[in-house]
Image 1 (cartoon, rainbow, N blue to C red):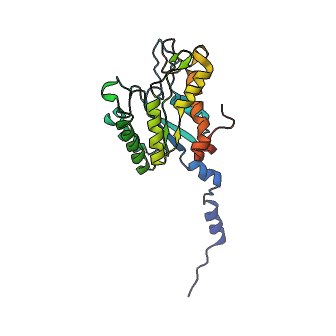
Image 2: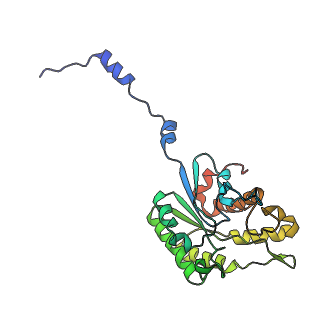
Image 3: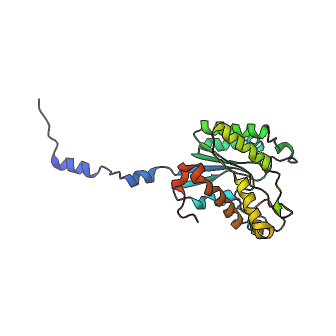
Length: 246
């Protein structure tokens, strides 16, 4: 059998043009970790702020400041939405199609009584909607994380008076049943505001009369409360947090 020898010069020329993939170049080619947020106005982004609230900021808008550059935040929270209306309007369907790696879920403020067709019952329908988010997120390859709704800054006799605790407790119940991590932002915010008092926590508000939403500084404090729980509740995200936290 005649064997054709490949010229050494041609072989070397071929090898020179083979791209070399280092570990760093392969890592750079991988898509960033994507964290999606869904929720209401306390979470959402504000790019066109009202004139009377020029510093209005949702905690989801600044959440990414606590993560390194390997993380992309997809904030799909929207003002005025409840756990039911976010689904009814088709926004959850659109969010699902993006297939992020993690999904942080915070609803409650617009689920409360008096919100018309947006309201839900913390003992029944609210839990049903949360379970729907969880099941469908998992089916899409997303890891769900529940975040209880923070309290409004409403004080009575020097202490926080909240109507959101039933929704927080319902979320904790669902988290336990579905084996989903729950960050109890409601309790953490109640504790913080009680420590600061009414006057001491005034900087959280974007305007004097708004006790639900946040200023930029207030939003960062609320985001920090969420981030503080990540190492214990979602340890797989701990390596992506900035050290030290801003």
